[in-house]
Image 1 (cartoon, rainbow, N blue to C red):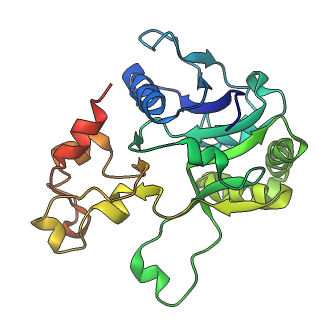
Image 2: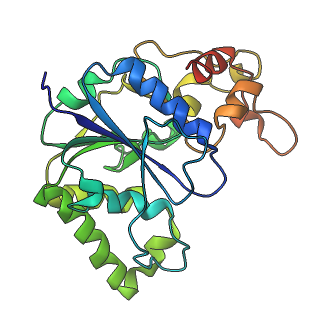
Length: 263
């Protein structure tokens, strides 16, 4: 284990995630990471309410992604820019709304030098006749800040913006573009499946059991990601009601509340 500090990043913009999201993520990292670390929140907001131990830095100037206000979901690709926030070395980027539920040191020891990311979860029926596509889920990824390989991801992003004929790809999510940029600039490894859990894909029982059984904590999980719905408050209170399809609903998960409020 190195004595050098590693980096942990999160992003916060707009009003969707109040300061306590940052503080709870920081508390989860502090409980579960044994080595020294630098915790950085990239934000365009004031740091009011954010734990003073959290370092806040601004986003880079607007690179002018098609038809999108800045910052936006493509902001994660700018974190790879060499010199950004003075970062160097192993850097773990975590979504501000996930739960840290177990040890994080292995996220820095696993396949050093590689780009590491979640192999994106897809519905079971989409995996019946084809392989899972090589697309990452950027709720949790690691890179080596300050290297030419990581800077190559950022430069790839800028080149794609300049290609007017590719405008449609910027109307969708950023994860496909980010994964492709990483494959172009180095070796990409997927996190072990049991380390990072999708709440909606792996904790909620399959339909129709989801209507009667509560979501279950997945043994071995170190991180639980909330992508799409249900989000954290919906997971705590239950995701049911008018307009929510029965197969996508979930009963309340008290254990999420316990972990979420642990500071």
